[in-house]
Image (cartoon, rainbow, N blue to C red; front, side):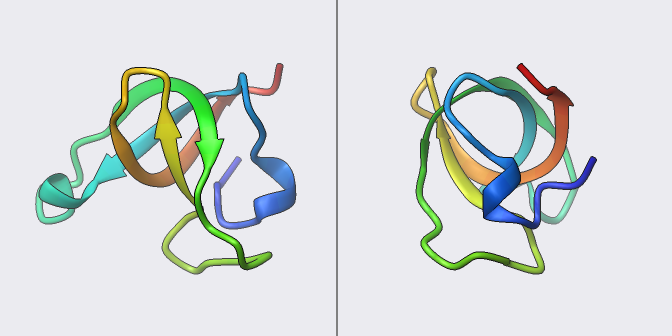
Length: 66
């Protein structure tokens, strides 16, 4: 499942994000969503979130719908 729609992203989900510094390589970072930072309903590059670890990036994949 892709992370381009805000309605499908919520706190507690396990997701894979790409951080700003990893955009060129496409390296994904897994973590649990702490906060949804994007206000718009849809974003073509992924909804921006903050993980519980403090890392910020755009959701590329929802790993577990919990």
